[in-house]
Length: 480
Image (cartoon, rainbow, N blue to C red; front, side):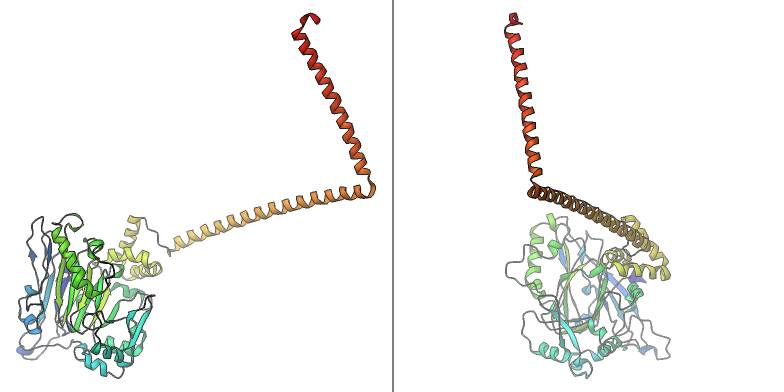
């Protein structure tokens, strides 16, 4: 499709409208009057902001009232260019908006999500099944999940005054059959993103990839890149979100605002948007596009109800909830981002990567061959490949054998040394015992010692006489 070839394949962030209403799915043939029939039309627009070689691009402020926000009516009646995130002309990527519309008075199709009716705050709070389910709303200092029943969280949402509130960002609902049946039945994966290659390894084996979101005003997520080089889509059902995106070439130190965060400042989404991000943009402008701010770009925009944001893999992004919000998001791997995902997965999820490769060989042979080609290019050996497993087994067996032989050699030397010491000790003890009882050993030893000493004295006297005679011959030759 146009989206896959022109936007997803080129990693262009995109806002898509009217997906929850079902306009991403072509309608079946209908006998209804033309004025009431729904049709899906896709139009993509993009714009670029002019910039000189020394200028810095950081655009994307929405039209509308003074704070950059718009009502739903204003958003729907504006030209699609107002929803476009401009980019620097130095970048090959331009952000786009895809608008799917219906003719005449049609507002939904048979493919509309149930979430449109079921996911407002009041209905979620009164749902007899979902309100009792515990959902993840944060982590403690040790990284352990903090969960809260939905009914308690919504009470907190309605009354909290926290600077950075708790935020339901839950993927564990899949382990709860009741919550899973409710949430998953209320939405469907948009047709633009229905190719998800990780499904081949199964739900239990694949990493977390879909989240149910309920965010109070001022909550959000700090700037990050999605894991394993996956792309993502995020659909908003209730409220408004503020986004900022940075292309992959912008350095991490710039995106994170290293050296711009002062001591004691919080690492929270609202602080990032209100304090750190303005500092980053100010430094980018003052740098004149030099140093680490060369080719700097960032995109800011507001997401409204019914809109779906596509975030390409490798793009830094942060989100701030401007109002209470409800939505859903999923990460995925398609053929367009397969290379990057494979390179990350083969090291980050080694066992899963091998099983994935086997499944790709069955269902997508060209992708399996591509994965092996990438492995050969990088000289990468998969840990769980049978040949590699056998090679490691032989190496480990050889190492064990060498360690065993080394140990046996050491033990043999220790035994020999022990036997030698025992023999010497036993022999010495026998001689001492013989001397104590007979005295013969001592007498014989003294006799031999005196005899040796006498011989040594005779030899020494002879040597002195011989030396003296030689000296006399040299000094007094006439005496010779």
